[in-house]
Image 1: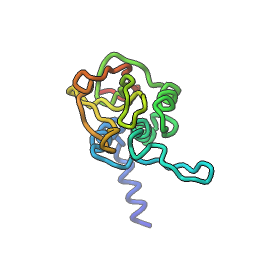
Image 2: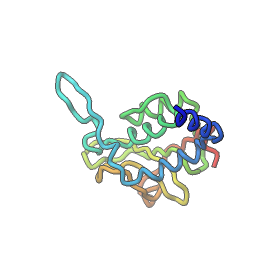
Image 3: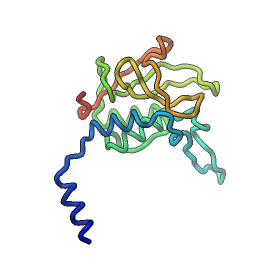
Image 4: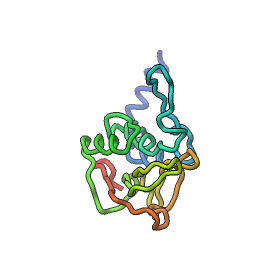
Amino acid sequence: MVVGKSLRNAMAKFKFLKQQNYLAMIKGSQQSKMFCHLYIEENNKKRDILKNGRLSCAYYVSCILKIFDFISTPHATVSGTLKDMAENNWKETKKLKPGNVLVWEEKISSGGGVHIHIGFYLGNNKAISASDIKCDIIIHHHTYKNTRKIIQILTYPQITS
């Protein structure tokens, strides 16, 4: 097991750059389809509670936050994600900086339901979130070109850029 031991020794010399990896994962998730489905079994029937990606914004954000231990568990709802964020020291801010979580006002989705939307701020007036139309992760203007108001900006102590 010389390889394993030398790998451990090499890793001991490096520091995991959590903030940079967090931002890189957010940016690299563009066009991903991996957050479009979340299956449950209910009354012996399987169903996709994200409805083929139409309701996947909270799952997308919460999965990335969980990977970096910024929250406790992934969620299928914005309210569950926000509750977990509050319990894990996320704070509201007025300052936009890369890695902040944005919450947009309610709107009628392509599936006909009314819901709030959640995503990440990238910088330079850009945000990234799960599209309810395309079933993938898209980059867009942080206010959807002034058509959707940001109702909350959330930051975390480890996001320092």
